Amino acid sequence: MRLLVTGGAGFIGANFVRQTLQTRPDARITVLDKLTYAGNRASLEGLDVDLVVGDVADAALVDKLVSGADTVVHFAAESHNDNSLHDPSPFIQTNLVGTFALLEAVRKHGVRLHHVSTDEVYGDLELDDPAKFTEQTPYNPSSPYSATKAGSDLLVRAWARSFGVRATLSNCSNNYGPYQHIEKFIPRQITNLLTGRRPALYGAGLNVRDWIHVDDHNTGVWAVLDAGELGRTYLIGADGELDNLTVMRMILEQMGHGPDEFDHVTDRAGHDLRYAIDAAPLRAELGWAPDYGDFAAGLAATIDWYRDNTAWWAADKERVEARYAEQGQA
Ligand code: NAD
Ligand code: DAU
Image (tube, rainbow, N blue to C red; front, side):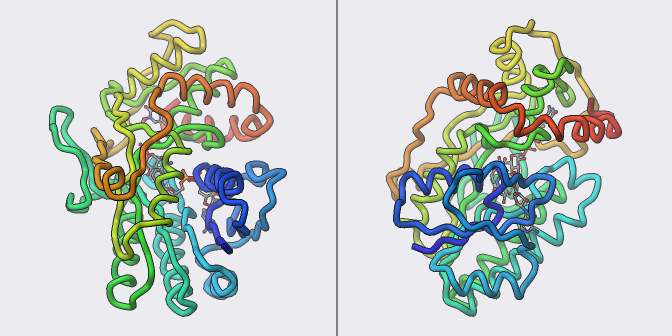
């Protein structure tokens, strides 16, 4: 199988490449990645992959790479909500124009596409709402990031229906694990503590996220690639709802700090309250189940990974925190 993985030097993409090389020895992988601030060549170090440094919105390059692939797995995106609130333009370019370029190429060459997306396209839920997001939940994105992801999903659905592009989609909840950029909630707090900074909680920290280990997300992507129905959307989630204050206190406790050794900082504008995924169709129809049942154990392993891999993240820490300080979020 000749796989083209866009965004394969990012958090989830790099973990996908690692998992695939271990579980699918026949896979030959080409990664297309622009190596933005979020992409890291070191995440693919020692792996048998071809890394092409380029832009998913570069139609000529994408056409050439897609023509040599059987399957494309599309992770490349601008992925951070906070950044999208300060400069939406790269989100429009990569998430929308980039997905369009890819769709035109897979359409021309008849190549199978899996589009990786987010539960944020559905907006948010009330804290006391028993409902979870399903494939039928109407799209209602809140931020420029989630709006561009929603737009990219709709492009994929339209290309599947109108042009017969062989595409599937998945919308997953919040991932955690190794190789996640330190701008994101969990690695930011871990690396703050490792560098003597105080962790930063937005607002009161009551917002709920539905955590899933990145390896479980990627086994879900493979379940859809192997047996998913073309044109269909699958939700991926592992029943991991926790509020941010709880996660913050778990990190503090696991790293030997007191429960109040953090700061409340300016809340995110338009901050989604709660995400929750109903992954019943993925479980029942495709036989998928998560391997990481215990969030506390997964979190402890993630903390160990950041402690053991300082060289992977330390060079970017000052810049990330200076940016948060400018935004009043440090
Ligand atoms: P990330 O920011 O860690 O990685 C994104 C990667 O895409 C980086 O390597 C970056 O260099 C690359 N990239 C950015 N713009 C590009 C361009 N124009 N051309 C080529 N490459 C480009 O993101 P992530 O957390 O790994 O997310 C991957 C995908 O999964 C995204 O589509 C995101 O929307 C989706 N997703 C993420 C989560 C999560 O919790 N992180 C959950 C659900 C879905
Ligand atoms: O739900 C899937 C989405 O999860 C993905 O589509 C996004 O790409 C991914 O970044 C993530 O989005 P969130 O906005 O939920 O993740 P983030 O790590 O930025 O924040 C998680 C929660 O923690 C959120 O409620 C905001 C809060 N937060 C975040 C940071 C960076 C803090 O309280 N303090 C922080 O310093």
